[in-house]
Amino acid sequence: MKAAMLYGIEDIRIEEMEIPKCEGDYLIVELKKATLCPTDLKKYYGHKDDVEVGLNEEGPYILGHEAAGIVIETGENIKNFQAGDRVAIQPMISCGECHYCKMGKKNMCLNLLGVGGSAGNFGDCIRLMKEEGIGGCFATHLKVPEQCVIKLPDEIDYAAGSLIEPLADVIHSINKVGVDENDTVVIIGLGPMGLFHTIVASYHKAKKIICIDIDDERLKLSGKLGADIILNSSKEDVIQGVLSLTNNIGADKIFVTAGGKAQKSCVEQALAMVAKEGKINLFASADINEEKLTVSLNDIHYRMVTLTGTVGFEDKHAEEAIEILKNKHFDYNLIRNIEYPLDQIVEGIEDYGKGKNIKVGLDLSK
Image 1 (tube, rainbow, N blue to C red):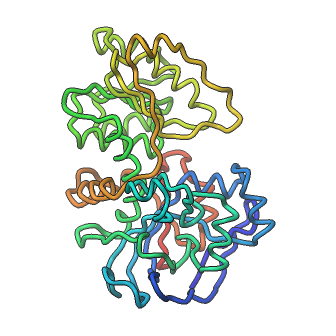
Image 2 (image 1 turned 30 degrees about the vertical axis):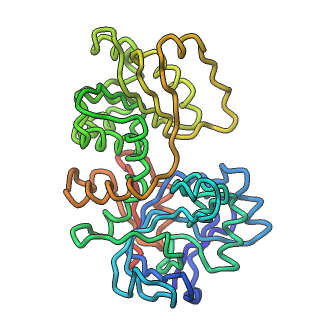
């Protein structure tokens, strides 16, 4: 197999290696398409504290957790999959034994690890690859436990299948607060996940979708994906904009999909434009060094505002993602709009999010 091995910060090398041995409860998937995620970029650039330590102590690792391919081998205990099955990768590796796993909430598993280092301590993920052969998706082949594969309908091609994981994350976010035909929805931040929120809010038939960003091109794209109104926060007062569009009531549901250093100010905007009994979901993660948010407890109390967050997804969210893709509710090429061969992964990382690039794909068959 061929793999993109992360040796250190901004140090990825394409290497040949043996395909891991398949046995027991594991499968080998020949990967066809993958997609880059900001989580991968944070590790490549060393923006996570445990990355450099893990690489120095445990050695190189294969990133990547958004992918699809075909099963080529199964262990003797596998009953629900066979060679030839088309699958998407579900990257969460849960223990199945803790309090949350027994509740069916594997995304909250107390011992959670992730394919490609997508969850858990990075050093633990590297050790899992060294000991069990379970790495990441920036490779031609992947060994995974049965819990990490989802059958892919014939109507969904591999490139679209590589988007099931991020789309399911967004469906979890939308379903957490509930969106229906009575809701005015605001989405703050139009990176790929903000655009996915626009798509899913439209799929749930929100009454009005207002998208906010500083990039006019992203704002225009959100219009193609379901936004009814777009507001540029670098050019106008978006709080007053939302209030005026809602007769000074405010938005029913707000999704903060801008992360990093931008998140604090975006949450403050959300609190100022949410309706009484409104709900705000924090989808993205903030910068670990960012100043803590200060909120008025009485404002939350008297206005009965719900402030919550989501991470990962459950099986039911993946099932809805498959339905959205199968029904072709949107053109996925508007999101996964550029692709590189695996050999050019560094170029893909460097181009991620620049200009008109939204999500960068990888063709693992080249």
